[in-house]
Structure formats: C-alpha cells, structure tokens
Image (cartoon, one colour):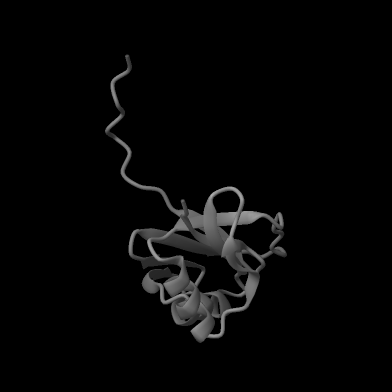
Length: 124
C-alpha cells in the first residue's frame, strides 16, 4: 500500500495563442472566464478562471499548431445550460450537443487558435 502524495495542489491547462487580445476576449466574453492575472505589456501571459477551471494563455512567436483533438474536457453538472450560455454569446460550436454512445452528453467548441474544448456530463 502506498501513502497518498499530499504535495499536489492543482493543475492548469496552458494554451499557446497567436493573438493574446483575441484569446482573452474569447474566454472572457464568450465563455465568461475571469481574467485573474496578466504579465507584460503588451500581454505575454494570462491566467483565467471560471469556477474550478483554470486556463493559462501564453503568447507564441511561431504559428500555433493544434492536434485537431480535444485539448481540454470540462465536466459540468448541466451541459444543456452551459451550451445555451455559450451559444447565447456567439460561440461557434464545433460538435453539436448530443448524447454519445460512450455515456456522455457533450459538445465541443474551438477557441480562436483551434484548441478544442469539450463540455460534458455523464448520462445514464
């Protein structure tokens, strides 16, 4: 039996971005994340948070390359309410909301750099 490691605190997703201002506007205005911290002027790094979800944005000098796969999956209590909220703010949906055979009701969206963010909840 191993002793649990209690030195971990939390983790954050770090997304490279090509246009910091555009990315901050997307996360703040469309997904309602709060901007907690910015560094440098013009901004080179930003920390955003909504509920228990933290996203860090880092400005890249080279083009941002994404894998075309989900970069972040956010588990929520009411995916239909989240879907209604983000679509109300003009967010472009990548994969429409629906019940999946893998036991989730979810949807995907893309941020301005093509990072895919999935929001979902388990279904019975």
